[in-house]
Length: 155
Image (cartoon, rainbow, N blue to C red; front, side, top):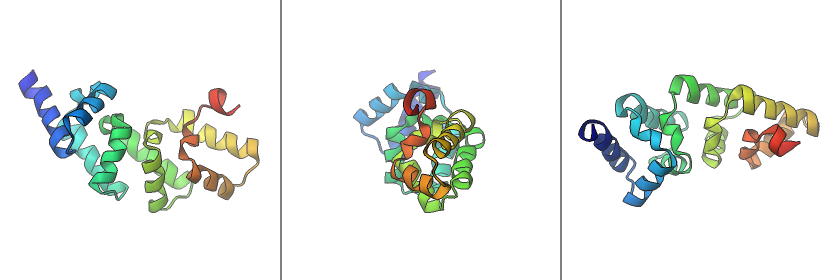
């Protein structure tokens, strides 16, 4: 019902994220499925997790969420943590580098490790004949590159 589900979610998004009506409208238009997310099971735990894990302040996280609203509905265990762990371990990132990368390109949180991130990393390594340090420098300069489709963007 509107009173039990929809209104509390809209109020949460407005108050917790300190959104203007215009920002709220943009967020819901971009990602209507957020209205079906549980505040207690999805929205608040994800907000807290990303704040703690990426060591972000509220303003930084709000910018990320406004850029890529679906992240608030992602599962911490099935999506966010595996992706952040992959980026940290595979690219040998410091916490600061990880935060910078995700702040620059929040859409990376929506990329599949198996279908996007790892194949793109391997393709760039092989195709450009770069060592891992050179590739890391390139990716840190332009993080969206990791989310590119090999077939549509890189070949």
